[in-house]
Length: 86
Image (cartoon, rainbow, N blue to C red; front, side, top):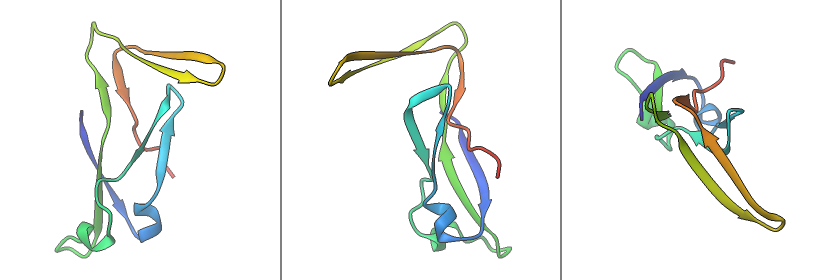
């Protein structure tokens, strides 16, 4: 997992949850829960999150049971969960 940092302005931004179309079975959010946890000495607010990394040469599979059977997701090597740009 890689840790990423993003400058934010509001508590609402901090509570944002996003998904990755290449990994539709998971969602991501920031590690911090309160805006004050993000305050920096320079007056900005910086929130952090971790992505999911599948190493080169490997794959990762997730299988879920649903009302209609099983769904399996196969992830190829790469980084998943990068927060979309505004």
